[in-house]
Amino acid sequence: MSSPRVGVVRDTMLTNPLLIKASLGQTQSRGLTVPGPDFIFGTSSGSKRDGGVAEVLSSWRVQSRQERSAPHRMLIPDFVSLNRDAVKSGLVTSKELSQYRAQMGGAKMNPAPKLPGGRAPGRQAVPDITFGVKNRVSSPLWDVLSHQYARCWLDEQRSRNQTSNHKQLQRIKPGCIPDTRTSLLRRSTALPQIKTPFKLRCYTQVAPALNTFRDEEARLRAFRAHQSDCVSRRGHQGLGTYSLD
Image (cartoon, rainbow, N blue to C red; front, side, top):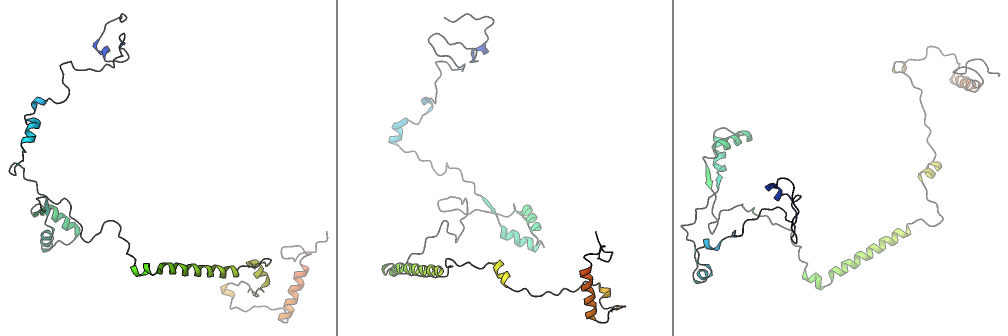
């Protein structure tokens, strides 16, 4: 016996699983609407008038060719005639040809050819193309019987061993320090680099206006004396007074 309800019981309460209460000894309903007991699920066998299994076993019904509807044949534009007429009209660019085909394409259409059996070609096969991976060229039977491949493999192994032995002989002996770039540069003598003083282009061909030295040797001696004496002098170029402190 279900507990009494307070308030108005509406029809929508019977479809809401949160408001449905399970009856005693029965499972709780999900609120789904189920047709009555007179409803028949599936297709009724009374509508079929083919005679059932007996007619199938006793006769064989074949549809005649006249009853079949004529298949729709796909139309293909005749590009050869379209291109020929376009060139005769003076249209040579791709844009002009595409516009001419769009305007006159419906007037010149050829039906697609039929295949044996009355089937229309869905897709034209591409000639001279092999799909998939090509098979490996078969090995000559004489080379297989004469063990030619085994001899080639042995020759390759011998040549590989000779190459590895030659590389081992060329390896550095223990205790010998190999030469590096630094050691080679230390032993090599650097070539003297003569640096010419920088001169402006406007003064390169102009001789000095004043030469106070008697000769070039006297000028070099004076510069050496100045270089050794400028250490104890003040100033940027060592031309100032002596620094005594």
